[in-house]
Length: 590
Image (cartoon, rainbow, N blue to C red; front, side, top):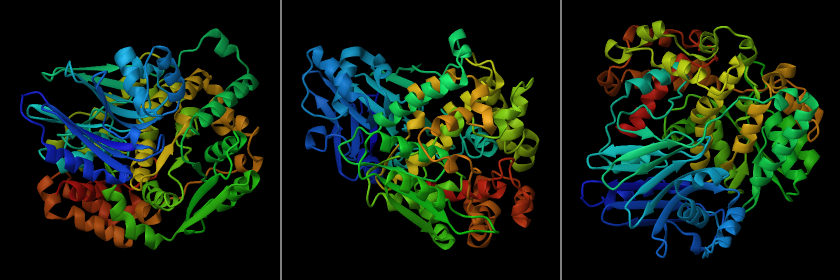
């Protein structure tokens, strides 16, 4: 897990080495264990290293093999690198390091751009060929690792974080109207290629981008998620699927134990993280460290799941750490969490995850985490509503969308409104080939889009703010493909995630499974009160906000007058969405 950056020139001018150094410096937290730069006439590459696999200097990046004429910068972890190494050695390749980076470099040389099909892991990379001058950029299938792009006159820059590109300079930081529409409709999710900024794009998951020396570029989507099933899949019983799934889960967790440092686990106390801990223990992990974060009780609601997490920790004998965060500390550290965001993320989990990561990083460099299970296995409340739906687009939008286009017209100044970009996007994605059942269509959209730019992005940004690598076994692409073959009725059984819960019974205590789902919002971010409300009020009244002129004053005032009365269908604060956007813009673009 690291940070990568680069500049590619198409016009014959030299790479701006100072700009590359600024990008590298901005990403220091992602790779505190080392850095490197490679600059030639027409391209330059930077890398910040977090030592997880092959702790020696032989694995330092940028990595270049002069005999092959190929170089690489790489962020992520490829779990099947040992098997690929053996295959490549059989072809005559010789290795000077022991990690996954050199395997990617030589796999590209052996198999060309299609080498990505052989990788199991999370990754973003840039590979360059000395002799042809071509550069290949790529991103993993589920978008676990980010890759941002900034076109510039006569060239292109890329980085693992959007703020790194801003530090390089020359980026158009005006608002992208399509990105803005998505942000305000999909609770801050902005699907690729858009971001909130006109001058920054992001490479889509499961995609490679080949760039020629003259700047000609060809994008290729090498992976898509298919929910079509054959007769055998449909005929398989619930019990059969449970056993098949359990085998898939064991494999996904075991793959993510590949490391030259100990691997811990984030243990929330819910089914998903508890199952991961149980499978790690089953796989023979010794001295397993687990971590749980909790908050203050509010309004009679429990602010933590310490009791459930400790049931699991005791069952599997983990070294368990409870991290209690008072609300005052959450609010004090909120500006730091916003600074760590590559894009504004409204989820209350962000600040909690930020502080959890800081505490975990004192003891662990790698953890497994439970994100993705709800999207992959049908855990959200809108999936049952889509069963048999005759209007899946409308039904999905009614459950998921923060504002319809009519309300968007009340919110946005006329020059920013445009067409209903979000309705068109959702309709195109839901009805694309490969999924005919409305539930499958929603699962595919959530797994390949909403998950990528909400929970997964949150995990990457907040953990990497402290040089902590988070691995997500529920997003193992082989497991996700397996889950897509399981009929929706098995996922929705028992109120949601039925097949996953029944597989979990073979591993973890029943009291962790047969319990209400927990979610602990930060009250000051849900209802906006006290210091946060004042901060939002000041930001939206600032000169910078007035000059941006995004929002109609009457709408903003209505929200400010009674923040708690204006919540989205998913119970998020409409005012916090607006305030966070402005706070993020002022932090990163001023």
